[in-house]
Image (cartoon, rainbow, N blue to C red):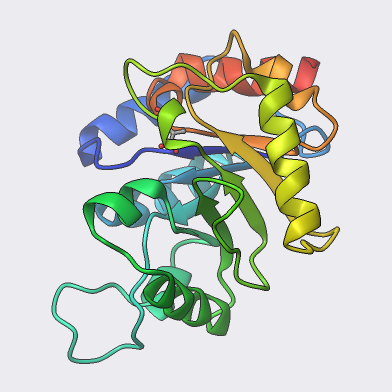
Length: 224
Ligand code: PEP
């Protein structure tokens, strides 16, 4: 699984440009080789949904957050039911949400419950092997903060594989849950991550912002 996280980036026109570029690179994907999920800002969910359907690109859409409440008087919040109309996935527990927005374990569990109730699939981010994973998430993304973002370097793939194995065993993660790695993944290093036996895919921030790099990530992972 290749997942992209656009974070707080791109206007609608920039997002449309990205899609045009991607389809111009004759983006050929076999669903048998990998699944692709792109987590975009809320403002882009509707235009992305419309364009992906028109271009028939095999990319699943994800939101980057979800309200811990149902629909109602919660100013500024986007409920799971609202997301479900436009996207299949949501990412919860990203280390940027934990750090900059002080999201607690208790809050994250409430978000997971709301997402599950509406049938959204969940990519749950954890920064280390000590952080607990709620039951019933579909994907666990191990993303060490020391590897995320500009100026950082990716973790050693062998070490990332070890941590992922540790998480799987200690937290009794079910065999159906995919385990992915995130943090400075690039077209150049992606093969070394997906070649590891316990790494089922990657989560990419910066590289997913560039259509050419994103397509290279997918091609290089598929070839590996
Ligand atoms: C991320 O924040 O999920 C991430 C992996 O970012 P980057 O690829 O830019 O390090």
